[in-house]
Image 1 (cartoon, one colour):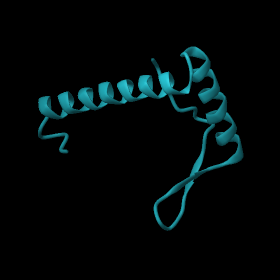
Image 2: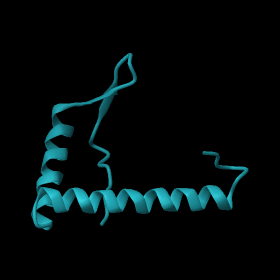
Image 3: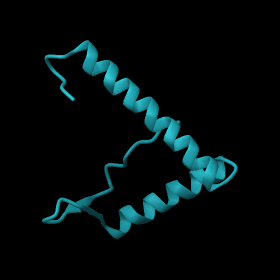
Image 4: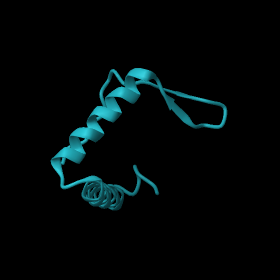
Length: 74
């Protein structure tokens, strides 16, 4: 699975630090979600795949931090 953010997407941060997507970014996010759900057997399977992908990314980040303790700290 490959998830990438489009450079066209834009988000604004409010005073609380929360990000809000503009209308174009929301539409693109919705389109990508529909594509993901269609790729899997439904929303639940999509969420499971995204959770597995997230765990894989976290593992890779921890491995990088372990290999480069002077550069990366967690």
